[in-house]
Image (tube, rainbow, N blue to C red):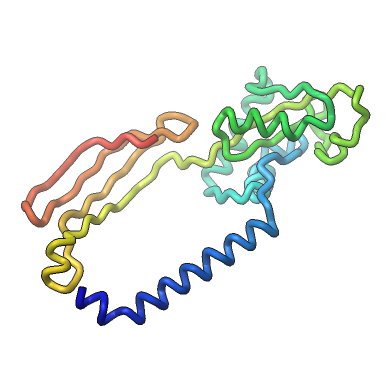
Length: 208
C-alpha cells in the first residue's frame, strides 16, 4: 500500500485521463453512430476499397490482409447462391439486413443488387420506393476476425507486491492461436513460465 500512497498523484492523473478519454469516446460515438449496413455496387464490394468503406461506416478497423480476404470471399460468392438474399418491402430493407447480420454474428454487412452489378445501392433511396415495389438484394456479412491472434499474459503476485511495496510477477505466458471458424473461434498453443515455482508451462488455448 505504501507504493500506492507514494504514487497517488500519478495514479489520480491516470484515472482522470481515462475518464476524460472515455467521455470523449462516448460523445464521439453519439455524434457519429455506426452504420453496420452499407449499400454498394457488386463490383465495388469485391474490392478492398469497398470493404474498407463498409468497415469505416461500421467503425470497424481491419488489417489489409482482412480487407483482401473479405473482398476475395465476396468475389468468390458472386457466382454462387448467396448466403443471404433480402426480399422485403423497401422501408424494411435496412431493418431486415440488420436482423440477418446480427443473427450471423457478423460485424457489418454489404448489400448489392444482383441484377445490376454496376449499380450503386443507395439504401435511403431504396427506403423511399413505393410500398408495392419488390426489393431483392444480396447481403454479404463480414467478420472482423484476424486469421492469427497473439497474446501476452502477465500474472502479478499480489501478496508479494504488497509485502515488498512494489509490483512482483508470478507468471508470464505467450500464446498464438489460429482462427478455425469464420465467426471467431480460435485454437492455439500457449507457453509460459511460473517464476514462483520455477516451472515451464505449455498447453492448448481455445478461444470463442
